[in-house]
Length: 445
Ligand SMILES: [Zn+2]
Image (cartoon, rainbow, N blue to C red; front, side, top):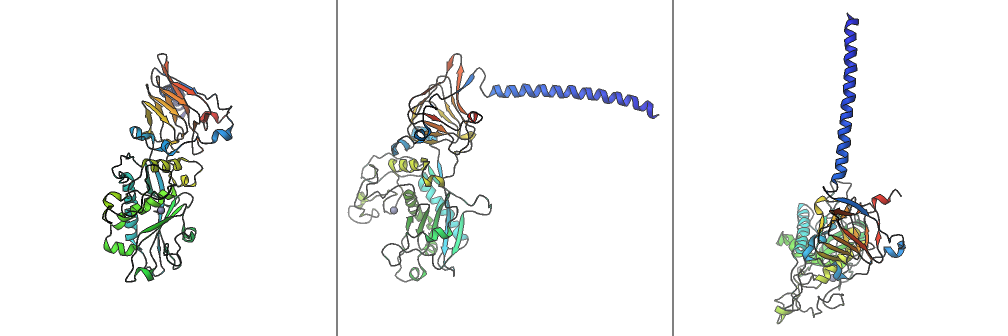
């Protein structure tokens, strides 16, 4: 009967509902406990954490406080005892293969793609394997790692864009260097017409010589280049070079690195006052060690000289390039892949001894000052989004004149956390003009 069946059914439902409520409450309780535990777990067991708040911030007028502290190139030379304090910077590049309409002036197919990858690889190889200076003969100039590289970059909204482009233009495809009529090496026309992402990517134009001269019997095509702010032109008889050796891209590494040296503010090393004491002036008579009498000891291998092997970067030259890359007002900083915006768990920096940061830093992970560690900051330090600076008990963060803690991408970071255990706390001191910006907990004020 329906009525007899219906009654126990109803009771069953009520019991189930009561059980559900109990289960829900139980789950909610567990969730709250877990949440509290997670919050507590951000500080390790037995530690307490307090957020350090800057005192001087209101006192310093923003306009003067924003000005970067004066620093010299030496402040940017990589510290070989703490290489992780200088994350590698990546210059975004794309490559344009210029050709005539008949497609007879330059590589134009998979060979150009292979050549492009080879060129970037060879240029990066030279940056990874910096060489000791040959000049002055018998020098003891330190050999430092460069800490910058290239990365081939297409348009972010196009997954098929590999950053390699082909253009066919009878007027603009060829390169004419100094000393010849119709020299066009310094013209920006090809850049303006075919450049891609010029504000954020270094455009590299691979240009052949004019077909009329390139196929002439007495043609002597050298490899030359020119730096034009956000673009580089390199010229060579690419088709002929491929014909002689498909791996001739190794010959381009000095040329590319030399022009990029110009892009990041380096001058020629041999005859000018390039602002570096470790790049000696010299006669530039020897292209390589076999160029004539005396060349075994007079040849340069510096990247900013004209020589067969442009493979040596001095500490001052590296410092100057890295200083320019850290300069927020420099247009060429925008050519870098901003790896410092997002927090990378695997790129945390731990300070364990006494370290002074005179140059600006773009960190890519959290910064922890360990017990016994002392970090003195005298310049801009950018923390990635959401990152903290943690000062462990017995560690010290000294913010000195010119220190500026911020996020260089317009995002927010989580502030300086002082940890304490058994009455011993981390120390944070602040003296002079110190600014702290882009804190996440300052947003809602
Ligand atoms: Zn040059």
